[in-house]
Image 1 (cartoon, rainbow, N blue to C red):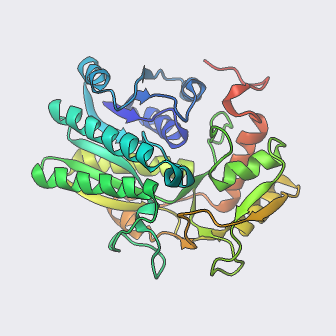
Image 2: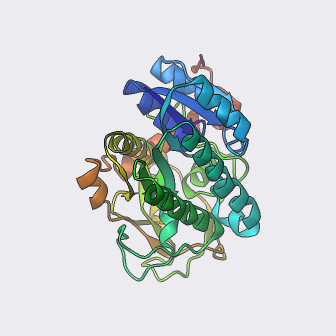
Image 3: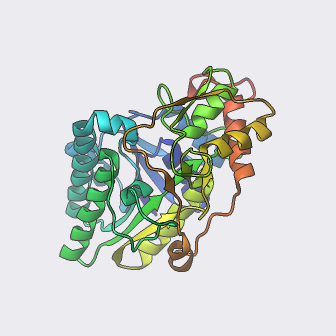
Length: 345
């Protein structure tokens, strides 16, 4: 069965491709490498022993997407492609609205033309915005506080409208929390372009000497140590969640949102301490002003996904830290430099 994966060379996309291939699916990848590397796909092939079919294509390019659908018998789509940095979205909102929303509209139009009506959408916990209570559950009123989150929220609303207009559609809206970690092989992991926007690659790049210190954005939040609290989830648990969601959309109809998280939050300083324990060295940091659009506390109620998708996160914080560090120490420059004991296909 052929599954189209948009943004399949990215961090979460590449790990999901491993699980797709290991489960017997054929993955068709579309990616423009705006925040990913071709090397990631080679390493997915190395890990799985399977070949990927790849198109270097932007989802805004409708003609190119039509060609992908013409040349393959695609039965479902997992849609990761999109810009994803909260801070950058505040600075460049038009870029985010154009890329994320317009790109999704193009994809949906092509899917509709080829009668492909099964979709797993990469949404985000940012759609919840600032809430008065945690854990966050899918019944809460969504109220994103930054342009990135609003693009995810708008796309969710578009997808709900698509289903209402045609009940043959089957759509899973996956609101995942903070993915960290890497494949246990250390061959693939998170390799952001430039200075990382997310905490964990920032920590590991400091630990490996690529960056001199960690910037902690805000220590005056109303939390027990003043730093922001997030629900961190292992990227392989997240990949497994996408497979469970795929099974759901292939066998049912509807449009449902699901949290993918652990149900527990850790502060920035707790994460620093956890990595120091794993790495065996101090992580120097400096406190900076809060970033626009950031919130104090966010962690999931994942019970709906456990009940309806038969999924829950299995890997703990120690495994997340271990696998993140294993990737970084063997790939200090990310995919730009291959270590001596790693040979790509």
